[in-house]
Image 1 (cartoon, helix red, strand yellow):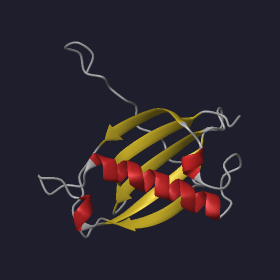
Image 2 (cartoon, one colour; image 1 turned 120 degrees about the horizontal axis):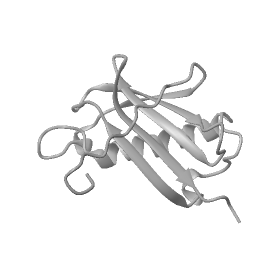
Image 3 (cartoon, rainbow, N blue to C red; image 1 turned 135 degrees about the vertical axis):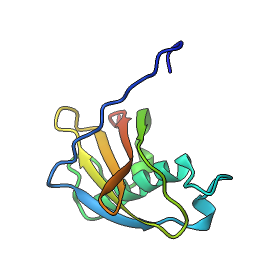
Amino acid sequence: MIGNQRLVCEQLQVPEETHRHNMTVTWSDIDGYKHTNYLSYVRYCYDTAMDAIHHKKLSRFHDDITSYLTKRMRALYKGESRAGHELSVACWENTQDPFTLHFDISKEGETLFQCTLEFYEPA
């Protein structure tokens, strides 16, 4: 929120060609309300980026995703998940900015969480 006005984030459109990685929500991913903690969603995004690098699906990222410094993160929460739920995480590069990655986390085809991570270019 900014002041008393809601900050509205547009939902990302997931392209046909994305790298997908499946995750299972574990008990250690759960918060006090028995929902997946938002930090776990962010970790799922980084894990999926690392899997995409491993499978050579990203053109600008190599080695370890944590070696790239994060500049900015934007997140959109659309739904909830719980321990034992199977999630599909889609990852794709921004066509306008090659050091920006987008993520969509879904359960049974329904988007739960979306995230955009912008990284600094390596020196």
